[in-house]
Image (cartoon, rainbow, N blue to C red; front, side, top):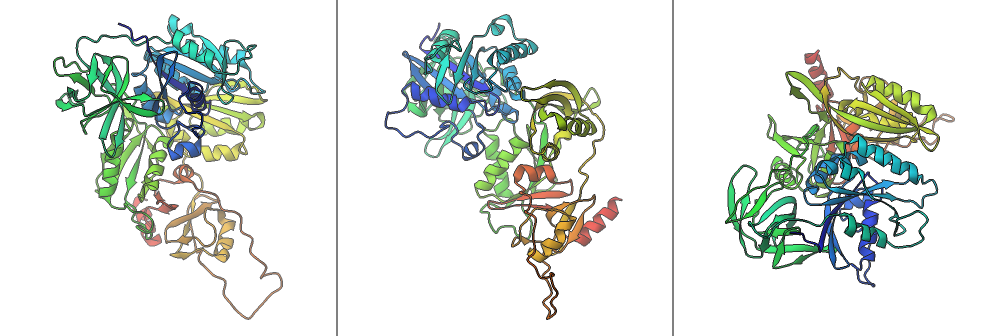
Length: 605
């Protein structure tokens, strides 16, 4: 049986190739919004961090009605760190729109998300976006996409993909570059023609796999997924097949489908429809909801393992509790357990102490977004240096590898190749790109990229572009040189003054401006040499009656380096922490006392 009046599609692409902007236009042109309704740009990026960074972090559902066919659309993240979102979503859809920038072509995350889509066997439509760019190279990009499909072992049906040309920002899609229409009608028609309608049966009882979790303070925890068989009614008695093999009976208290950007409460929904159900607060991603008379759980969705971990520790600095509302280990534990309910690619483990938790994720961005969300919610915590997760395979130590794609002006290729070579990177491709630079491709241990981005931006004078994606596990590559420079550490607690900072800035780059409160053991800069150095940034100039020509001129301070969260996580060494509060990000030594640090280092040596 076929549900001809439904299509389920996901939109996949590399970061900033225009997914969310295109969805905006599809919603507007399908009549989802009233004519006088005010709609913000990138309306699907509802999360504050998504709006600030211009990236999609959480997959989201919406729908449009076109020619009496309901098109359920899932906007997916483009960054590999949020691949856990992409893998789940492929179980909900029958086709994907693969967006590719008409100038940049396929990028590492394009490859990553397309690989997931092809493995799930869904039908692809290639949308060459931003064709109104002056530097667009449409035909070459289509050839590059075909090469990518072949590289990913696409089957014959998938290789015969339809192509459409679009500009999400301008709101048009065209079958041919020479067409002159200024709407998305060709794209919407192609979706109805090319994307298969859901198939299934109303007989045999309900089967609904939960692929996302939502929460409502009035309704409670809700599960989102596609009905693969049968139908579900409001107030129906159903069975939840849990991940550990148990069965839980519950009643469907609320049943919703998606209508535009809103949930619409319904009394019944059949196979092929994407629905949201409530009634069981224990419902989890990957589990199956079945009818009571035919309990057949669907296979659990396998999610790629985490590759990076760091310790989340309660904040025990002298400034602890000043800015945050949630500061205890109980608060930290409850928040991480709540995150586990919807963040399937995350893993949280207890450590030897009750004040610290080992949190593992798919990459630095994946974990830093969690930390950023927590600080905005009022949490205070300290986090340790990110460490890769090693595996023993056939008795041999293996480590995660990354496929790094780098674009740099030609004059900087030498320093990039040299630096990545020291970090155990192997160059597998080197091609001229379209704007006079070079495109370099490396296989490099994930360890080698930790802390590299800031050095990369320095080496390339801010002109380089670095993208990377997980490329599996390989045997351990050996030692990689760690950070070559030490830290400038505060000598005492107090307020940093211009005189103290002026004397300290000759030693290296400072991270704080005058007037910043500091404490003993807090990191205030990067030493120009190896090894740490303790300075007194609170030292004031002695006031005497003696005056000398020129010595009392205004002190000129070099602007401090802005240590935002990702840069701080890249910078810290193994004996250092990042202190995160709702208003501040500080770097500090694990052991704050200079004397205690000296004793500790003597014991180790």
